[in-house]
Length: 141
Image 1 (cartoon, rainbow, N blue to C red):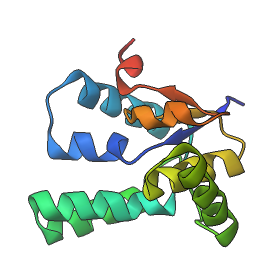
Image 2: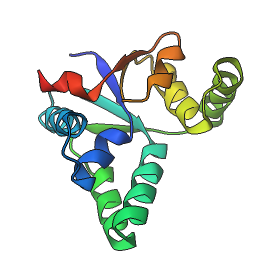
Image 3: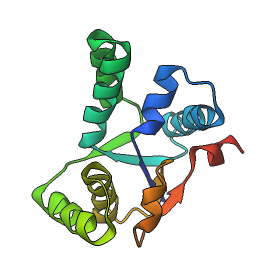
């Protein structure tokens, strides 16, 4: 079995917004790998909130709801609950590393599952011991 990866919300948002960039192309490639079972992928239930919020604000509520439904049933994607333990660990990361609360919850979710590879373009993840940030562009090769 391959190592597990944590996938941040931007991986799901960029392709939906139709962005034409290397980041978006990398995100599409990462999603293809997840769907094909070539990448063992986890994300927080918080990702659903972020994706639906961004898509609803940019494309409309109906599109946000549709994308949210698709996300919840995305093949090969596993969701991690945001438990009190996770949020308590996130609070510590906020204080010690000056992370934004949502970023801290994502990091705490990955750490709680012992996932080291974190797919995101958010450079703040590099502050977190035990996590290795993997950029979207790295999926182009």
